[in-house]
Image 1 (cartoon, helix red, strand yellow):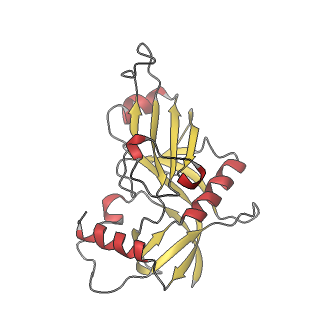
Image 2 (image 1 turned 30 degrees about the horizontal axis):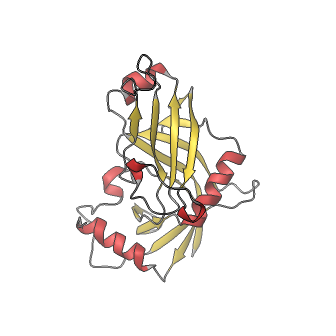
Amino acid sequence: HKHTAKSKFNTGKSSILKPKNMNTEKKLPVYKLKVSEDDNNPTVVDFIALVDDPAIQMNWVKFDNKTRFLADNERRLIMGALMVANMPIYRRDEKLGEYYVVFEKEEIYKIVQKFFRNKLTSNFNIMHGADAEINDVYLIESIIVDESRGVKAPEAFKDVSQGTWLATVKVDNAYVWDEFVKTGQLKGFSVEGLFAYERTDSQPQTVLDEIVKIVTGND
């Protein structure tokens, strides 16, 4: 089962935690989200949103005037996870009903390559608003966690899964920093893009375990 759809992962806790009207007795399908490496194919992550409640449930870490390296100047840096490998995200729509989507490690690597190759590192908006694109916000660091290559996550993100995409973003836009980041109104990142959906009937046990843990609230 394959189809292509524009997806935004800004739906917050309801996207992966148990909604009130969700039937947990039935086994929900899981779809792998994919992009093509062909630049002529429209599947791509094309924007990163600053949001109040990221679907991946990970807030960013702020580096501001409390840093000892630049005590007299705000560095206006935020760091966080853009995509978490193999984390199931609950979705519901008219076409597919209730289901989960996941980004696999190998797919995240392809997504990041295409994102940089197409020079999309300054494509940011607020809360995925079509009219809320923001200037002077851009990526300055990007990490795909992969210990097999010696690429480890920073201490603040040491528990993320292998293949997770972490990034540091510079916010030169004073209004965005003062009104949204510094106040804590926005707390994390959320990607948006056009993805091919590929249904998987043989769900990896790690994904099933993660679904159970998230839905039941057990650690």
